[in-house]
Every structure is written in structure tokens, then in C-alpha cells.
Picture (cartoon, rainbow, N blue to C red):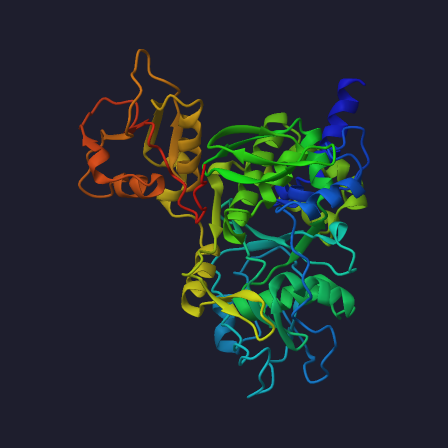
Length: 514
């Protein structure tokens, strides 16, 4: 196979999943793309074997009866009114929510559903009122990246257990990625309350007009979150494995330890512990990492899926293949379900070619702050959105990163490994880069001793605007671990020495009991 054919094959399945890259652009479709037969199949072998493996293990999604009825309620119908850019609001709100003047992107219009009847009770609660549209001050193009589980189930119903909205800011050249919890319990405009991950499947089952599954999901997100999603890309799980394998695997800095059942490929299962460190994943292991929930929850799982997207984008950039996307677009659309037009892709491409991970802001919901736990009358455990914190989160999603969040322009943080554990400097620097800081892993210092406790040396010693409190918060450190040492001639504004007590896992992951 010559180099050109190799590149073509890499690009095909790179982009089948780097449709995620597309928007972050298609920043995550890769996280599950393209179901393509290949001799490099995952360890479990056939699709049937993978299904059986995932069902048996704790990583499998528990198959539950939908809490939302599929029966169409005639009392809840679409308003026959098209509103550009999702602004069903009165004229007075149009200025703040519509695309700014000078827009040359023709985005799909949104049909706005009627509100539920006043006083009606659904699933034991009064349905929430429609939220106000989020204010936009920039040209944004929002793409929904969906991973669905129908490949692993037998009930012929689609659940989109991965939902990541990627927002490309055309004016600033930055990208925001936001994971939506699958158990978010919301009003679905077919006339019932239900989990957010069921909206797409309900729309497909009802042949919802307009837009079938994505049409109903789009309206559901707009009603409950106030943001307008313009396009979508959806794939199943097995394609994700193939993409990762064709990329040659991806490297992930794992900052929380996980333990779950793992298929050995011989029909047996063992408990697998994934420790803190830098790990190389093939497709099967990457899917295990993306979906495990044994000692964690769906909120952390959304974060891990974004980490995988970042790793895939980094690998794609290193191969220099993004510019070939248009040539492979017909192959992409053969295996990826998407409504993104080819001409829109061409217009987005210049914004993607130079996109760096420093220009990407990652946003996730926080349990007990953005949501509250609730049990439905049917006994289902769900998450209810809390109005004001969620509204602030959506506004943050629509707002470009602040200067301190753009890592390439911020103060530099040099990270040394003094823990005695391999690659923990990389783990810590990636944790800081996740929060938008300019951190770089520097390995071990020559002749340095192993430290029992991590140390942060502040060479900037700034009275105002110091990053010290943020670094401590991100890495779960205390002020007792800080040393002020002003230095005018310095290589880095802050120097971090990672010790044996390093523990930056602050995402609700339960500690492992050895």
C-alpha cells in the first residue's frame, strides 16, 4: 500500500470520526463514527461479541423502558412559524438573540413548538416554562455530536447517550464544547417529560416533522436550555473503535483512577484498574474508558469523552490531514448520519485548519450545582436542571474564552515530575491545560529527589491577577504547598513539582478500595 493510499485510508476513517474535528469542529463525531468492517477489529471480535461483552460488563448502559410516552399528543403541536436563528421571542428580544449583522452563513431555521397547556401535570410534576434564548454577540455555528446505542440494544429505540454541542465562533476563531447529561429530565415538545437522551429516538419513532429525531431534539434543547443547535452528526459505537485503530491509537492523560469489568476476548471478564498516568488506547480500550461508570457518573463520563475528542483532534493535526476533508466528504457521508451541507463544510474549513486545542474551551455540567437529583413516579433516577446556574452556564458557552483561558497567551507553568511515577508531569500539565492554562510538561529535573508532597513555586509573585489560587484549586493542592520566589529573569512564571501525594481528581470519581 503506497503512501497516498495509506493517507487516504487514514483520512477516511479519521474523518469519519473526526467529523468531530470538523467542528472542533466536528469535534467529536469521531468519538464514535463509522461502522466499517476491518481486519483490525476490536479484541472482542465480531459486533455480536462486542454487544454481548458490553451488556455483561458494568460499562454497558442499563436498558430501561423509556419514561416518555411515544404516543403523539395532539394538544402539543408545532407553531407554523419559522423564526431565523431560533428566536421565538418578541421583537424586543430579536436584537440580542439573532445572528449579528453582516452574517453570511445561511443557517437552518427553527420551528418553535407550543408550550404545554397551563396547569397540566406530566410525570408527577408541572412542566418547566420555556427558558429565555441565550444572548449571542458573535457569529456562532453549533453542531450536535451524537453517539447512539442502538447497536447494543434489541428494542429498536435510539438513545443518544453521548451528546456534545460544539460551538464554532466564526468571529474569534475559538470553539466551545459542552457535554449534556443523558439523564437530564426535561420537557420534550411531543408533549411529555423525559430524559434528554430519549428525545432523538422519540422524534425518529414519531417521524417528527420537521427534522425527525434531530428536529425534536433541537426543539427540546432550545425549549429547556435556550440555545439553537444548527446541525448534527450521529454514529454508533463500533465505528469509534475502527477510527481509533486506524489512527494508530490515541494517548490520554488519565487523572482519575477507574476500575470496572473488562472483557478479555475469550468470553471471560476480569476487573481492570486504570491508574493515574499517560495511557495509549486502541479503539476497544478507548471505548471502555469513554463509557465506564462503575466508580463515577455520567457527568464525569461526559468530561472523558471530551478528553478523547481532544486526543483525536491532536492526532489528526499531527498527521496534517484536515485539509483533505473536502476530498473525502462523500465517503464520510456514506457512514456518518449528518445534515451538514458540503458548501457549509467548505466555508468552515479555513476556520478549522489552524484550530489549536488552546482555542478550545471545555464545558460540563456540575452535579448538585447545575442539576438536582429527583425520582420520577415510575422510580427512575433523573437530574433536574436548576434554572439560574444552567442559564449562566449556557451564557458562558456562548461567550468566547476570557484572556486567562487562552493558554497560549497566559502566564507559563512549567511542570516537573518528582513523584517517582512515570509521566505524572504530563498528567498534571494536561489537567491544567483542560482549564485553559499555559502548562508544559518538563519531565524530571536532573539529580532531583522524589518529593513526598507537590510544590508550587510562584516566580511572578504578583499581588493581583495571580494564578496561584486557580492552580491550587485545579490540582487539589493547599496554600502550604506554595513558595513565593520572585524572579525577573525566569523561564516560567510558575514552577510546579509533582510529588507522590499528587491527586487532582476532583470530578466526583469515587476512590478505589484496594
